[in-house]
Length: 248
Image 1 (tube, rainbow, N blue to C red):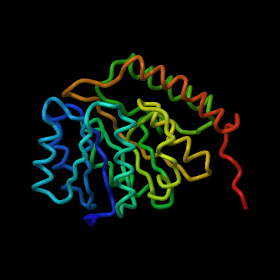
Image 2: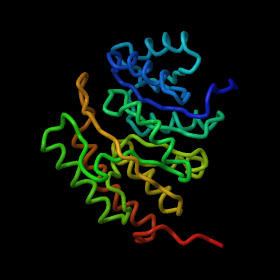
Image 3: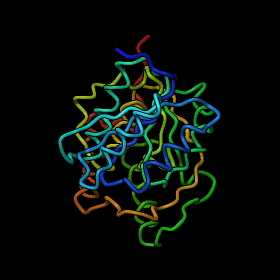
């Protein structure tokens, strides 16, 4: 097994992100804190996977995981998590590949998670920080966040966000093969599984900028999955809207 060049891994699932990947990789490699990048590519028709291989050949911090076809965000992250847990990474990030997440915020996450198990990037903590979203999309996101809080009891302002950092032990505590969701509800499910164990979850304020290149992956099916997933999580937690009591 190859040695990792750092303790921090940023997992970026890609599907047709050729336009964004070189600049994103450059930004990540220039951070003052050393990070590795794992590109999980779902056989992008635009050649993103081939480009990722070229970048990895030039930079030992960049790794590529190829999957045979587009199978959803959740499955891509699960594959990346398993890859990370097989190696010596302590901090494991989820991050979009379209620059909607600012790579510089990784330093903020690393500061926030020093005494926590999971840090979630929040667009809505102490105000709304979203750029380039139409009002309809913003209202959908805010409504979804309220819906999740009401049903599950999780006290977070942005439970559907996809920019987050896990401590290794938090990810290792999960049965990744039992994770059911695949769209944006994947973010809700993982946070809930960690929170309901009584682990510490913190929010790190971020600025979210909607993609300027490429197309959004949002769909009606993704929204419907999220609507039903929160009820499933409530029942998994025994209708409890708080973490389970810890065994002494």
